[in-house]
Image (cartoon, rainbow, N blue to C red; front, side, top):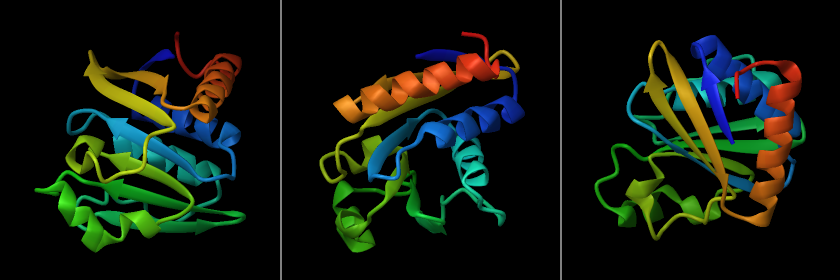
Length: 158
């Protein structure tokens, strides 16, 4: 899946579209991209669409931001400050449940659960480019439904 998002509002809308098709079952979603590419903005869109009304900070300093939402649990991880994948044991990553959104997953390589979906965000012109690829059969189904939702809602130009 490939999408061009014209601004941060479109990135948040793409996150909301993902929330609409996100199963309640545990999922692992990797978020790759440079600083400022929109990883947290995408997660903010998911959270808002699922009913979260509070702040959605980047977990750069806390490393993990947990969210308990009606019928589901979501964990937002940012591993940018991790110096060694072994540090994830201290965070209790293996004990986390629900949907995991993991920014900078390459910093936890070998210690993270495998991704169901991998999202790559990059800055392009004044907007962002979103690429999604499946890491599992469940991820393939999610990617397909998300792509359909984005097209139906006309959120992005594909």
